[in-house]
Each structure stands twice: as structure tokens, then as C-alpha cells.
Length: 296
Ligand code: GDP
Image (tube, rainbow, N blue to C red):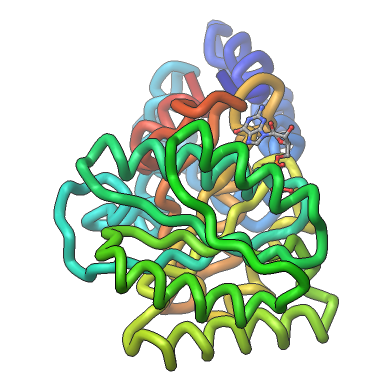
């Protein structure tokens, strides 16, 4: 599954561990975006275990690594996961979706539409990317595929679209409203201010909303992706993350680095992983499963 697997697969199948073995492990973890601090912490624990002979064979160390990473990532696991439930707590339940261009935001919204519908919920979309007509068209395509309406405005701004969409969702009694926004870098101050405004306008139109502020993150963006998460979280108070492109050649370790980056409370949970371009390629995140896949 993950790229890391290929390197590690052979490492865990060797007959003994020595200095070179630990060096290779350390290198593979770093190359897979696990991040330096987390890698160092893991290597120290594994070396200790090997020294005390608590876990000395590559197999035992693999099991220990899975367990350690699973514990580390437990803090990012949602409990319960608001994406995978039939429950309707707020009607409409408003999801504001943000991220940088190309992260997989629109594709993920398409997947979310299908997921919510499979739970018996009615969905409305809002095209908050008023900068690019292509983005609006792409969202409309996903809406068409799911037979879901998309609220758009010609020439309006994102806050106005969001405001309209809340009213539309209220009058149609939609269960879910997903508001897309234009891709932006967290370093673009004026665009981050615009997002804050969108969030404020949503809250005014529907007190308590948005109920979820979701960042879509490309799982292959390494350190840059982590700074994006930090900055979006500081500006908007994210409640959830979806990490995309964790299929194919993905390095896969980014969520370990996220756990380190987001050590402060309150932190957004990782709600789901994108594992392909298809509409069904979205899976819930669980720390143990992710850790097992990463090191197996
Ligand atoms: P946006 O600019 O953030 O809205 O990104 P898009 O949704 O347009 O996605 C950018 C590209 O990434 C498209 O080619 C998508 O098909 C692709 N993509 C999105 N999610 C995934 C994923 O989980 N896996 C893979 N392999 N590709 C993805």
C-alpha cells in the first residue's frame, strides 16, 4: 500500500538487527515523511527494547513499532467519527472545506456526498470558490454525479455564496451542507482573512455553524503540508482533516509527523484517508490500521 512498505518489508524479514539495521530503519522513516522528531523518538524506543532484549528480533521490533505508532496516533483518532455515522445532530449540518489548490478538495467533496447519501442523508453543495469558473464546474460535475444541487453565484464572493447556501439548506431541510472554498496557501494573508470572514458569516446565518471545519491535505506534501495545517488551524480552528493520495506511491508517514506538529490541544482529528481518485476511495482513519499498514 504505502511506499514505505517496500523498504521496510525487507528490513523486517532479515534475521538479525545491528547498527546498520537501525540506520536503515531510521533513514526509511525519515524518507517516508514520518518527520525527524518522531523518527528519533521511535528509534530510541526500539534501540532500548533491543538492548534490554524485550524485543530483539526484526519481527518483534516491527510489532513494537506498530504499537508505538498506533499509540502516538491515537490522539488524532476521532471518537466518535462524525463522518461515519447515521446520526443527525444538526439539521443542516454544515461542513466548511478548506485547503490548498490540488490537495484533492473537490474530489473529496464528491466522495463525501456519496458517503453522506449512503447514510440516508440529503446533501446540498455550495461553490465557494468564486475565483475559478473551472472549480465551480468541477464541483457541479460531482454534484451531477451524486444528483445533488450546487448553490453558485455569478460574480459573488465566497461569504455571499455561503450565506445563500445556508438559507437554501434551511428552506430545503437538507441534512448536510458542504461549502467548498477556493484553494489557497496559508501564507496568503488576504485569502486567509477571507476564509475567516466566510466562517463568521456562516455563524451569523446559522448560530453554531459551521459544525465542522475540514482541511483537505495532500499526503505527499511533507514539511510544507505540515506548515499549512498549522497555519489553517491557527486561523480557523480546524475540527477535522482528510489526508488524500495515500495510495500508489505515497510515502504514507505524514500522519505521524502530524501528531507531532499538532501536539497542542485542541487538535483536529484525522477523519478519513483518500486512497484513490474514485468516488468510493475514502476510508475512515484508525490509528491501529494505519500503523499496521504502514509497517507491514
Ligand atoms: P482541489 O484543487 O483541491 O479541488 O483538487 P482536486 O480534487 O481537483 O484533485 C486534484 C487531483 O488529485 C485530481 O487529479 C484528483 O483526481 C487527484 N486526487 C484527489 N484525491 C486523490 C486520492 O486520494 N488519490 C489519488 N491518487 N488522487 C487523488
